[in-house]
Image (cartoon, rainbow, N blue to C red; front, side, top):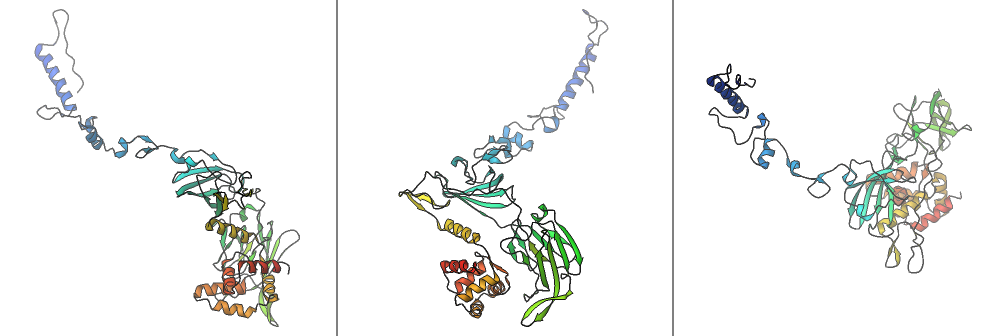
Length: 430
């Protein structure tokens, strides 16, 4: 009901106003409504605390009030970055649009920032570009998983000693769909721009889509790839689909035309003496649902500035660091086995690939019997590794120095790293 107001009549006698009884009735009605709204029981007893349904907390203590209001533990925590706090926006880099600018390519941060599971962004215009990464500590080392925004690749960055000055920092690329491709036979390969050529279309990875590539089918088994950057200049660049026995489905004739377009033609195969060659009178389309993988030349990238040791830091004999991964310990440059392996892999990766002809000529001219090598491969106990190594030996069109199967073959032949390097250098002259 609405509030009832007593009519006090005309002063000073109250003439014309409510009688004592009617005024008292209004007062009683007002009191009854107030008590009811405050949660009084039938006997008119008010509760110790105003109920939640009446706008109160339903409790007489802070703890029971939180329970009645359905508040969790966060209601008792302060906002901040200390243990037990509710984490504020921007704490440890989460949710904040901040960037720590660091010189290329060291990617080092001040020691006090290298907290476990801390988010960073790196301002860098060289190898990795502007990037964000998650860091964690492991003893004196700090690791980052960093994604670059220039080349959209992922890196594992290691600060060898977070307390050293200058900090020794190394990084290597993580294999992802950005830098590898799966060919028509299911094998993982190094990737740059990749075009998958089917009988009636092409499909491209992200890097290839950066080029204005066009596809044209000129006839049966006659394909043209236009406006591309051309074949890759190093490593593999054409991979054919094969059957379960490792045999190709058709013969392929490919070339890069004077205007830069790539011509690919597929034919049935025929025996010419002891060789299987393309039957140029019998063109055939690429086998249905299979494709020829074509690796293209990468587009020009931003210049990469390689890490340089601090020129003012030398060992006891005045020598600068032999590499970016060496550390100065008691006046002597040292390197961990992990970082030495990183440097060795980089060295092998930088060596030019060999063609099948160069590779076999080098072996033959140095007295190695090719049939004996197949016998050694057949001695590998693991059947899967034996089959993979044999396929590489028999079917690879190019050989890369850091290929794991090549390293397996050289170990079987008892060749040292130095001997393989010498053979490689000789093969490049053929």
